[in-house]
Image 1 (tube, helix red, strand yellow):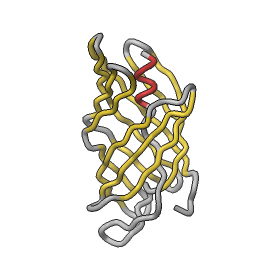
Image 2: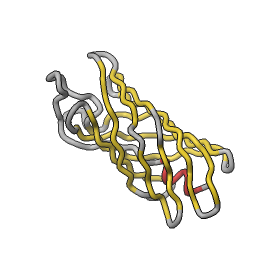
Image 3: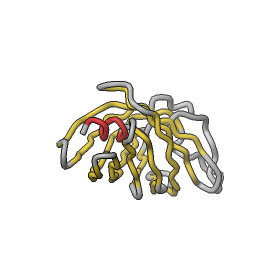
Image 4: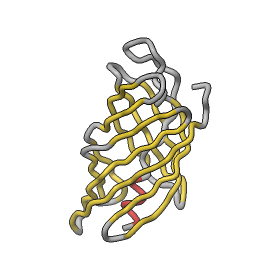
Length: 151
């Protein structure tokens, strides 16, 4: 379903550098350019590109805002995640959330993981698409490259 691809393109980050609770910079914070793959049982597999913006919040949390850029400009969705990590590899766990991707269509995310290794962010988020016509499950995954290393 096209609406699933639109809504799945929700993770992209932009923000200013923030410190974590232990004084280290959180490498998730910044702007990311992402290539996503969405797999839905009823619609197959598709790819899209998006911008992910991440800002730091309190207690090791991050706030993520993503906007799909192509094949069409899609909705903007915002999520939160909890982060942890070391100097080499950072991880985040998505907090449950949802995003409205069109009239009568909502994507519900209950889990998901992200990692940052250098200037590369990867994620995988299973979702349930809820609509007037029923529900379907899918997964969105992506590889992202940091756009602004100075953030």
